[in-house]
Amino acid sequence: MYLKAQLQWNVIIPAENLDAKGLALQKAIIVRLLDEFSAKKATSTLGYFLAVTTLDKIGEGKVRQHSGDVLFPVTFTCLTYKAFAGEVLEGEVHKILKHGVFLRCGPVEHIYLSHLKMQGYSFVPGENPIFMSEKSAKIEKGVKLRVMVIGVRYMEAEREFQAVANLDGDYLGPIE
View 1 (tube, rainbow, N blue to C red):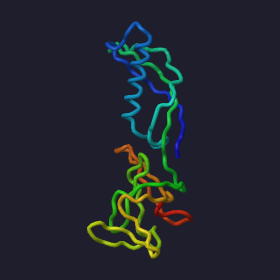
View 2 (tube, rainbow, N blue to C red):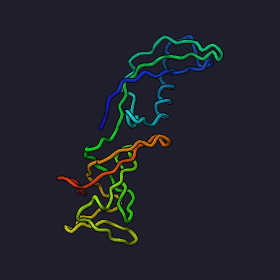
View 3 (cartoon, one colour):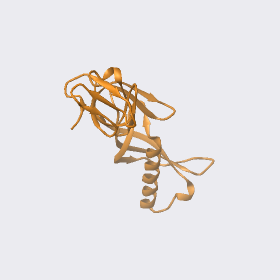
View 4 (cartoon, helix red, strand yellow):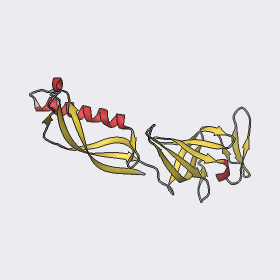
């Protein structure tokens, strides 16, 4: 699910980047904010950071005593993405194992669909393994699947999410 959030971060501008012209300073603050935003990647509460949509306020700068750098409190609005249990997602199969498949959906790279959650599908081994249903529907690498998320976990060290999904429900499965 996409979320809109208003955040307040502190942006530090090195003393050598300070300029008497206000426009150059504002540009330096925006560039530094975008660098920090892209490096942050994700948090457990907000999900993946996608884009800064508006710069709402740049507060008054405070000079740091020992370095001469200036700290600016910045308020901005951003767009984030976080998967929730019970949500229906459309993802692309990128890895097939004997015990299930892995999907990608937007910034979420690790959505696992176990063979136990694919009722009516059986594993067909080979050079290009697939899961085949009794109705001849195929789940193979590159196929788009509609799945329901049953659990989400945030991995703090990697700053990314993992999800577990199933195909139990109406209109879930391969998308043609």
